[in-house]
Image 1 (cartoon, rainbow, N blue to C red):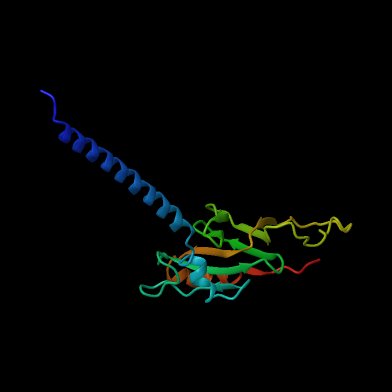
Image 2 (tube, rainbow, N blue to C red):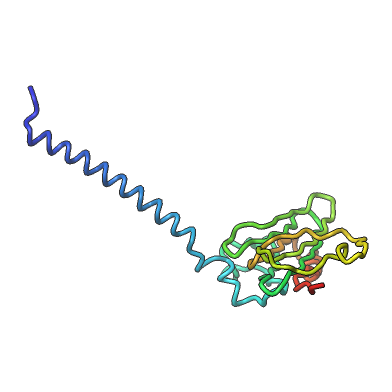
Length: 195
């Protein structure tokens, strides 16, 4: 027995309608997901930009419930943060990561990572970086180009215009607090003089 023509047309219409609805929902989902990735109005950089001076390392107070600079900051760690800006010239970053659990990360303004290092177990890690603008600007001659022999290891160069340098130290309790605080205070983030 064959299906009447109006019932067949209704079924075909229903199938097409749900297929179109499913495709439209998928397209809206993809567009909104890509749009959300471009929204940096509530990024870590935008939240900290007004609170931190440019090119200066700031040791943040211990994280406590209700007193966090950023969401999801761990209460078992101490942080030092530098908001860097290389538009006027390079920025030097140096840090000593004294023990495992210590990390340093350099993040672009949009939150993407430019550099990350973690201290291995049983070894002190010394970090020396130069943050430079991500363009072809001339930043001066190197000592070698001027005929001087350099005895120091050249710092790693990272191209980034604006962002955050974050040093994270594990909070091992009150007996280690002064040591961690002193190590965080020695982390340097400052404009590098042009040569």
